[in-house]
Amino acid sequence: MRVSFPTTLAAGAALVLAAGATLVLTACGGAGFDDAEASIAEQTLAQHIRDLSADSMEGRAPSSWGEERTVRYLTDRFEGMGLQPGNGDSWFQDVSLVSIEADPGMGAVIRGRGTANRLEFGTDYVAVTERVVETVELRDSELVFAGYGIVAPEYEWDDYAGVDARGKTAVVLVNDPGYATGDTALFKGRAMTYYGRWTYKYEEAARQGADGVLVVHQTGPAGYPWEVVRTGWSGPQFLLDGGDGQGTIVGVEGWLSEETARTVFAQARLDFDGRAAQAATREFQPIPLGLTLSLDVRNSIQRSTSRNVLALQPGRTHPEEVVIYMAHWDHLGKDPALEGDQIFNGALDNASGTAGLLELARAFKKLRRPPERSVLFMAVTAEEQGLLGSAHYAAHPVYPLEETVAAINMDGLNIWGPTADITVVGYGMSELDDYLRSAAESRGRVLAPDPEPEKGYYYRSDHFEFARMGVPSLYADPGIDDLEHGEEWARSQREIYTAERYHSPADEYDASWNLTGAVGDLRLLFAVGYELANGRGWPNWREGTAFRSIRDEMMGTEQEAAGPE
Image 1: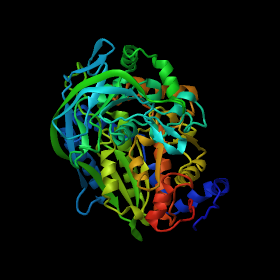
Image 2: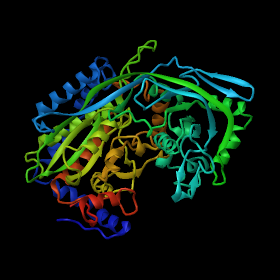
Image 3: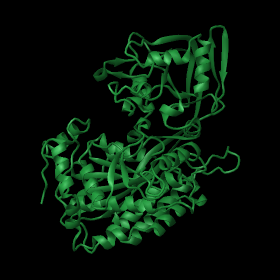
Image 4: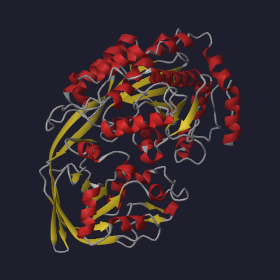
């Protein structure tokens, strides 16, 4: 049975709510579903996390010995389960990368107003270039405060209005004005839009002809502390290898610490807080700071090949139609410059999600009959370097995107214990919510929107590369209604992880983790994938989302909404 939902979300949701428990249980009966679901277990999940985040994996950096060990581990387990190679007779999709490592000894000086302010790399600022060249130089580049660095006609917003940014360096704020004001009528209020992402700010500055961009870091609107910026923008920076990028990429991309930004504004005889407040209004005009930046980015360049790992469970009757589960296997590798622990183990981020991928693959192989559609289990590379592995697959799909039913992404599982809810990052954007809601309600759980929309998680993981190409994508995150400790405790645990362990050597496996919540979440995702792989529905984006028209054009028709069968 195909359930066709009315065009209004409320009516469609009502149908799913009424049928939720029945839908999943009916679909699962007599197919060995219960045993397969129950095989997703805490013990095996924990073992995979321990193995993938062990010191011997050296932080799982792309194009390293850590990659060799990681992809061998994954292919051995996929093959041992009886899955087939997912790319013809190969387990891999090659991803050509170029590594650019800037010399951290680069000097940076800001001159003007009778002073010269010399900046220290890593403490005051970081700077890189995506141009594949040995040196990028800024010589007395004029600094302009361009507010949030946003040009958004649909919001009647232009932070570059009235200024010629060519040859200049823009200083911009992180996030977007809605976060700063909390005004729900301004952009999307506290929920970050893509305009708030640093990636957008670099892209827009390039369109404006700027030579450089410095994003002012603030922990609240950025969603992570300065240490994350320092480590993330130090050492090798990977890019997809597709040319030198001259003329299409801003020359220098960087960050200023908030303390340094305040010093720079004081040097310009401006009040930082006052100007930042003005930047959150439509009346803001770009402000020349009367200062210049001189900076040399000296690069060492290497090219390499990394790999997405693909394992396939062929479908029984519609093998050409594919449901994708994915997680990124990579992390940040090693930093020999650190004292003490030098390995970024990435246990939660994302050994946990990759371990979950293995558990889901094992559960599908437990089924007495393969599903009707094919299921692809894909561990992608270089997520930490800008979603590169998923971007490469989305641009060069092994299975046509118009035959891809949906993508389900896992990036950081629940290590704190079971919850009554499960978070959907991007809640309300696609009909995949209905599939997850159906599975959740049959198990006494509820869906919840992202509790931290201001951090822009929707744009920070691999599902986004599929979404922007039109493929309906689901990104579920741990819930916060902890059954034992409550919501306040669960929120505090997330905050502690972000402040103390995220993108640091402290992200290591801990035997005290309570993985029962992760198991529960994986079982929900198993039910969603099972329903998709055994049904004939083609979930779509909701009306009004940016990706709906892309999907409709891809499929050659405007499809009616389709929920679980």
